[in-house]
Image (cartoon, rainbow, N blue to C red):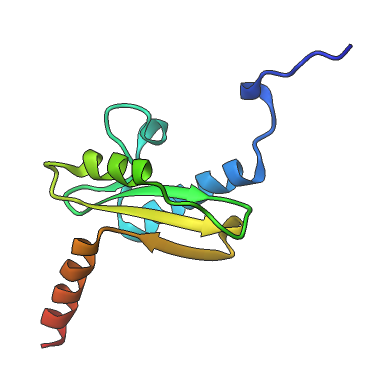
Length: 119
């Protein structure tokens, strides 16, 4: 009979190990800060660019990832009153493909900013 190793003592899965790299990379790229405890405390989201964006990072070894209503609502609730854009950053196949999901109104905001900058 073998003893079960507690989850906290097991080696991290490739997705879990990659998620830490993803969070640090996003923070550096955006000028934000990695949220302590990966958002499990008072401040939600994995990376926060204060006053601009709250980013939830997801990574998977798979070729697909399901975005749920619950996931979107949780991120939107986290930015309510903060004036920040909720962004879901998804890495598929452990970072081989990357994309972002954000509310439709955020796309309008970005397009307005780009149009103004081009003028």
